[in-house]
Length: 265
Length: 292
Image 1 (cartoon, each protein chain N blue to C red):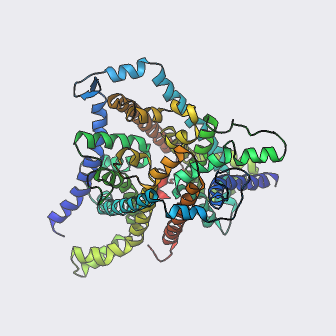
Image 2: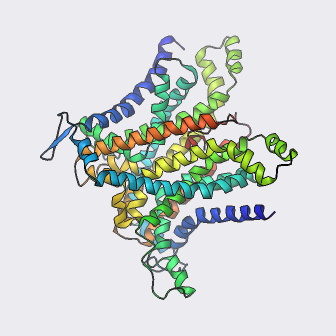
């Protein structure tokens, strides 16, 4: 009995440990003082006002959103066929393909970052190419390359559980391969694809290690915050961090519900 | 689908992965054998970078220092994650899924926010100092909490604990209840059941969790720069960061990266071998981020 009590206390403490820094950041975004110091004085929204007028921050938000959307598009375009390849195709080097596609997930981001930086520099591709329409081709391709692994693993896991008899039934009923794909296969992996897109979107919004090396003239949101943090801390950072926290939370809860939906395969 | 469309469907992802991942990693390897002459990278083959890397004590030292930080983070994450994973797998009843989500949600929520929170807690004007002064343990704020290795270890432990928890939880979940019951039927106490049944069966998950905590914290450069002060310069990832930045010596930076890459791959290979040897339950525990 005493063991089990100790276990519950320990578990509760770990929860406190995990959530305390997040709670602190959120609470201090309503701090009335100019410097972040103890004691906490709650009761202002002025830092959100400061944020709304910070041109650099707003430009960074737009850059991050564009980057995240492009990363999702690329990761889906490559990742969904990639998952099918792993599930169904046989070709020499398939094992190597699997390892390679997962590598950015497992390696520290800095290694992928410097590898891509060297690569684009070797190819004489400017880090600002494509700016100002997009934040830069290298960073877009970098995010796409690093995050494709998320789509591949999520969709592959779903494909492994798909009942192939359904596709065979469709073929037996004289549906051609395209009709089978659109009407049978795609609906069964739909939630996995959407879920993966949401994950890629949040991870891209938060990515620093690869972005840091590939960014051109326009900072992304995390890099803009990173710059502020290195100069010293102001409650404005807390306000933007709180907003990011809220947005990621909404997306992740959405994702979690999608994954728990009993009607999805 | 025509044969052509199918071939294209296979070729497209394969070519993409070659062009955007294989070639960049390969170039990193090649570049580590290039020579830097008067600040210009020349495509001349040389072993100089590796000679300098292993011949100057400061470089191996940063690798050992980072490994030390990573080892501390790994042990701390394991101590925090294992009991919680056990609790979630066996003791929490109805709200199991919800609690599990609550533990891993922070993984997907801003890394920067999580690291930055510690700055507010540990700083000279921070919450910890405020509390210590309020209870009278100290009269002036202490500057000892922030900008050192302990702060980095604390923040990285915070960041990677949910990571370590995922595979441990997955393995504990997959242990058949009948095995524990068999042990209890044979009059094994709870403690003996844990030590002789549950713990050995959970080794593959522990192994996977530890590998990820170790590899990712060793390669981290953001938390160390934010919280580590001058100690952060001793991290190998910061060395790479500076060689590709202000120090401008890409070939040497590439050599350090290649050593990091090989260490990481070696560890992953070792872990997967050990996992396979200890895997009695048949649970798949690899790539926890992917199965989140």
